[in-house]
Amino acid sequence: MNTFFQKLKLIFSDKSLRRRLLFVIGALIVFRLMAAIPIPGIDTLRLTQFLSSNQFFGVLNIFSGGGLSNLSIIMLGVGPYITASIIMQLLTVMIPRLKQLYSEEGEQGRKKFAQYSRIITVPLAVVQALGLLLLLERQGILLSNGVFGHALNIIVAVTGSLLLMWIGELITEFGIGNGVSLLIFAGIVSALPGHINQALFTYDPSQIPLYILFAVVGLLVIFGVVFIGEAERAIPVTHAKQVRGMRVMGSGGSYIPMRINQAGVIPIIFALSILLFPQLIGNLLANFHGAFALKVSAVLLSFKQTSILYAVLYFVFVFVFTYFYTAVTFDPNAMSKNLQKSGAFIPGIRPGEATEAYLSKIATRVTFLGALFLGFIAIMPLVMQHITGITSLALGGTALLIVVSVVLDLIKKVDAQISMREY
Image (cartoon, rainbow, N blue to C red; front, side, top):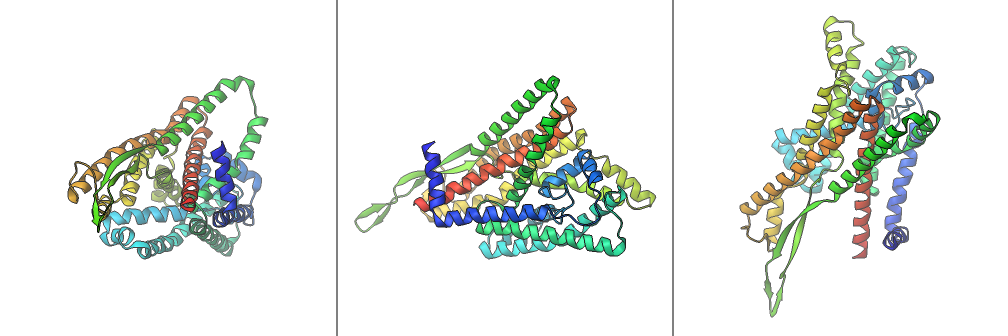
């Protein structure tokens, strides 16, 4: 407890760290103010009823940071930007030049890579805004304003999404933590008072065992995410002796900490973004009158969270994206070269290619455990939903996963800033 208060005191006493935290708070306040500004022509009562009975839009509301709940100017949230980032990450596997740009050309290369993601975000946002607005108009939630009204609403929605993307990048650069994850986190947390209020008003004493079960599962999920998030495999490293004049330097040992889940919450966000796309396209095609378009729309809209196929694909996507993101962020070749340049080596392993192969083997095994666990935790709420029949449970489980992972990542980033300043 004393350590906690000491860290808290250091956070507020350090000018740079305090400025970063205040910047994050200020950006989140601006984000919540934007989420409260609705576009014109909305039937609020129909919108509330529609969102409460539609799981797809419940998940979409998570990615919009709660902006979809009142059709605000940021109704699309960071969804288009996340989808664009996924596309760019996938392209690094197929296009060697992009992989080189992202992993080998340093900060300048990553800036170009991020710029490409921003460019792709614009057409994706236009498609999502068009599909969403046409669907809401068909449901009678949004009043028809003609071609000019549609164009204006699309421009507002796309601009709001790009503005939110910019705010997220500012948080990453001038604040602490991942800006996009923090925006999603803020949207989830902002909805908690409403959910608590609803639970109190709909309280049923006969459902107490079910509430206890939900609480136990929630605690187990939190424990599991924290435990796996903190677990790591320590790879011992020995530093060779260096003789400089009459002094012997560099002798000693350390270790490389390899986390079981190096990807954090990113695989879950990636997987949900991919799974949202079929339903979004299906809703867009439902507005056409052609027989083929309606048939394709019916097939895509049948792909719901209640289906077994959805749960299986959710698990597979989380598993694959955990491996994929780890492969992008962890480079055994670069680590092997850095160890060799610094005169360090892994005991019993020859420097160079042997070290690279050893690190790749360890990373594959460790990531397998992390990916398996993360995939299991992701589908656990869906399994509980199937058992209990309560549809809101899957949504709550996804939100809980994101919240816990983002909080863990934020704590680590704050600890890193504190450690840097102590040294």
